[in-house]
Amino acid sequence: MAIYDVFNGDADGICGLLQLRLAEPKESTLVTGVKRDIQLLKQINPKPGDEITVLDISLDKNRAALGKCLAANAHVRYFDHHNPGDIPSHPNLDIHIDTDSNTCTSLIVNKTLQNQFALWAITGAYGDNMQSSAEALCKELNVSSAQGEQLKSLGTYINYNGYGPSEDLLHFRPTELYQRLYPFANPLDFIQENKTVFDKLENGYHSDLATAKQLTPYQQQAGSTVYMLPNEAWAKRVSGVFGNRLASDAPPCAHAIVTELEDSHYLVSVRAPLDNKTGADEICMQFPTGGGRKGAAGINKLPADQLDKFISVFQKHYS
Image 1 (cartoon, rainbow, N blue to C red):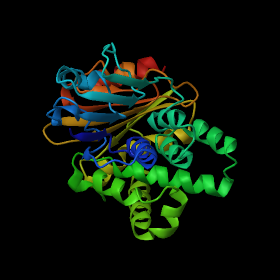
Image 2 (cartoon, rainbow, N blue to C red; image 1 turned 90 degrees about the vertical axis):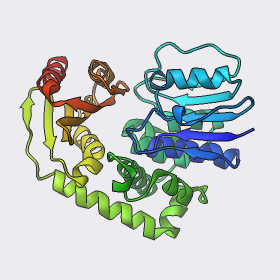
Image 3 (tube, rainbow, N blue to C red; image 1 turned 45 degrees about the horizontal axis):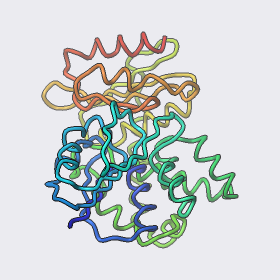
C-alpha cells in the first residue's frame, strides 16, 4: 500500500496539507507543482488499497484520473473549494468540497480538524485572499492584530512562491517549501526560527510587486480593469498576488492580469470584485485551459487570437 499527498503548490494547498499531516503524521509521496499545474492525479499509478489525499485542485479537471484511482480500489480523500462539476458516488471516495466564495481548502481542513492547527488555516486563507474569513478566524481565536499581520504576510509570500510557468522559476519548489514548513506546528514559530526562507520569499515578493506597480492599465472601464504583463520571470511569479493586491485595493472592481507567454499565448488571472465574489470561474471556463472558483480563476494558455474575446467577455460580465 502506498500513501500519496496530492496538493496545489500555492498557500492554500500547502497550508491545508500541513494541518492534515501535523494532525495525522504519515510518510507519503508528495505530488505537487506550480499553482497552475492542477491535473496532478494523473501522475499516480494507483494500486488497490492505496491512500490518496487530494487538496485544492479541481475535481472536474482531474475527473478521469480520479475515476482510475477509484476503479483500482484506492481510497481517496478530497478537500477542495473549486467548482467540481458532478461529484461521483463511490464507497472509497471521502468528499470535503465546499464552493462557497468565502471559504478555501485550508478552512475546510480546519473545520474537519476542529481548529487543531488553525493558525496554518489562517495563513492559507490569507494567502488565498480570503481576507474577511481569515480575519473572522483570527477574532474567534483571539489572535492579536500583530500576529494576524504576520500570518497574512507569510500566507501571501507562500502563495506568491507558487506562481510561474515552471518550478525552475520559483524561489522554492513547492515540495521543498512544504518540507521546510512542516516542522513548525505554529507558523509564527517558523517566521521567527527560519528567517532565511522567510526573508527570501519576502524580498522576492516585494521586489516583483514593486515592478508590477509601475504598470498602467491596459484597458479600464467602470467595474473592471485589465493589466498586461510582459513575458518575463518576475511577471509570471507575481501575476496572481498582483491580482490579489489590486482586488484588495479596489473591492468594487474586477481585475484581469494577462501575462504574455511564448508561442503567442497568454496566462490569465481573474479576480472578481471582493464586494461581489462571483463570476470568475464562469468567465474562465468558457476558454480552453480555464478554470477556478467564483472569486478567483484563470486561464493557463489563452491563444493570442482569443484575447479580444476574453476581454470582451470579462468587461461585459462586470459592466
